[in-house]
Length: 288
Length: 292
Image (cartoon, rainbow over all chains, first blue to last red; front, side, top):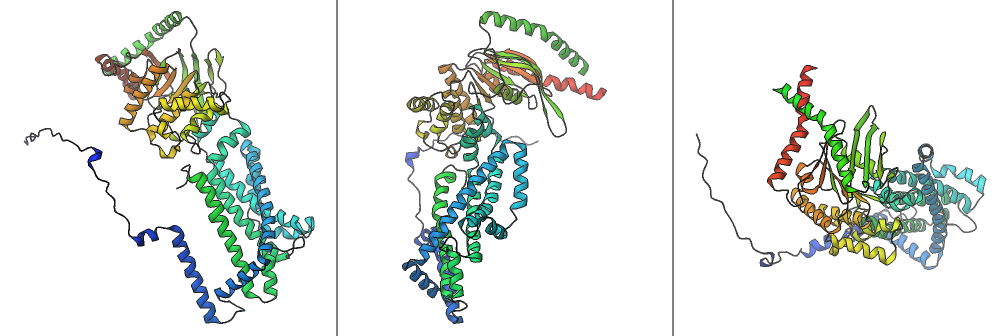
């Protein structure tokens, strides 16, 4: 039979935190540079632009693919002479109206959906029917109903924004934890106050995701609609600019128009939505 | 052997009803006023997909002003369900719950609930804003008064330096302290605590219990506390309600040891007694099972 080994109790003195120096090792310069997200992203963009430039020069056919530098030059010229800013502004105006009203309607629809069972069924059915329907497919009808102008564009924009946003909002509202809801009810919050003070902030990550998707849908729909029927209320937007340039075989300008769309999209995503995210869901720890 | 144990528990059970009511009668006499919270014959049932489940069956108890009333029972005894009913989130199928003589029908800020889950803090508000939130939304206090009240209770739970931090930057214990501060800032008639320390590690839990008790020494609030831990019940409670599982029925309503004597021999004896009562069911069930 094995005898347990007799062991003494051991007591140690520990050092206080003031006895330790701060131990840290600075990262190398390369590591520091590589850690910058924007630098990495810019590197990717530069790489793509270089590829385009080289291919364009090698192809040597400006009617098919003008080099990157030509597109940038066309962009610079038309920005300087005010054509692109004016077109972009006209597009953005329509876009904002459509996006804002689509989001507002989505909000109303979703609040209706969570406050009653028939509302939920209504939203479910409507999104199932209309979400897969491309907004552009409604354009011919919209033209008949609202005529050749901003009205039709806004109609298709609302259609493209509303379903995506309300689907996300509803998913967000449904995902709010039981505890959070009970906390709200504990303080006598009901109805719209409950939605405003508890549900919307708690579902904000989903709502924001919905807004981003809605924004992208709206942009696509708008440019496509402008390409199809061009001028709205006297002055065309970016889609019309692209269409016009193509007709005049100014392919560099076509690319300039596309670049403008990309740049605006990047700006909205990286400046406006980033800003909102930083101030809200990231600060609240709801998104890492 | 087994059958004699069954007999013994049966006899204590049968005898329990009359002394218990007698006891309550005496308590009511000595206290002059009516109880703060009066739970009478409460049966709670709820439906799942396939079953109608009875969570508690004819549970009665009274909570007096300044009580640290602990509801103790194993999981499945409906203690959380009972607390939700007191909170007004569920309606009992039978019986009634009265707070200060008024029937409880819906949630309200006179009964603030402290949950076990950490997501009871609103992540989009700082500690300070969280504590102030109910004061403002219920319209109890505004502006400077609300700020002062919030700060007062944040100081009480020793979180002053974190007042402007967001909840996700706090540890579990700190989050629960914020929730307690938020509850107490409302100065409710009764604070409902649903296993608030169960999700904490053992060391933090002990510290939180001590802090809760020292807060009680200072403010003497009334608290209804739900737990499944016998030591926690003995340490925190002034009075302990013991529930049996499936469905929850009152097994006993007993006094705990005096404040600060949770390590005494008395406390140990009480712990053994409670332990025996909770496990009596299992001894009782065994012969039934073999017979059936």
